Length: 295
Image 1 (cartoon, one colour):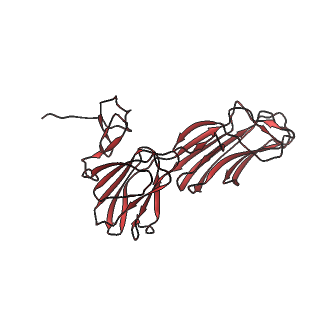
Image 2: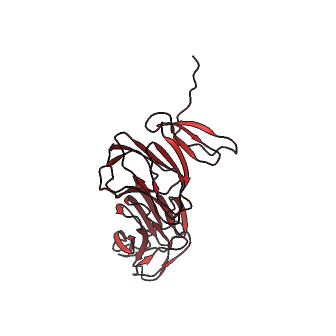
Image 3: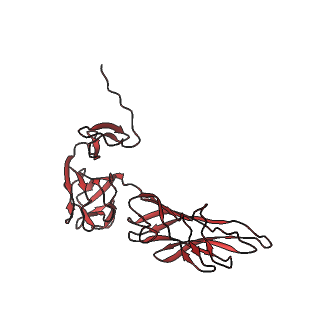
């Protein structure tokens, strides 16, 4: 008996050359990717394999899900946030939504119609939102008025930025770090061009880490603080002190925490020291802010 054996892939392969498609397996089934980089799947393996594909672009209108349909949506032309509305269904009905192209500014909000809930939550209330290319969510109806998420293919927002040139920090003065260098930016959350911060695009839990360092050494009982601000207000901080009688110490202040944040929030790094005179940030150990969405 002839067999075709394919290795399971951990992630999608690169986009094939023009005029070619690639087929591959991931843990949940068979996928294909076209020469435009659009990934479709899983195909024909149950749990969504029988869905009919509907390809569309979303711009100025909401989208109502259709039972038995995989909605493959390009949302890059949206002019505001739009809703993907789940209709009334019957037990075991399925609907899937996939972003073939995401958007750097706006999001597709996943919400039930009037009287329709998601995962048993409040009816007609946002469950979550999509904005990253390749995000996929599949729903199965448990009743006429509720859909459960059976495939959560959202992608974590990841943002990391630092200050890689000198910035003067006045002594004993809280100063916002002017982050100027994006290190990672999944979900278009890093804003170092205009506001020197990381933006929150989806409500949820986030792991936040930060580091501060100044170029000058600190002396007897002087301190350096690393502060996390949300929406312009301090929420937590850490401090590093130089022991009494000790001088000429290069120190850093670091911290890590988990925060519950809401879409539209923003996170900033602030710095404080008591050296006695203005000091530049360190250009060997860069002040940095990182954020990871916990899905």
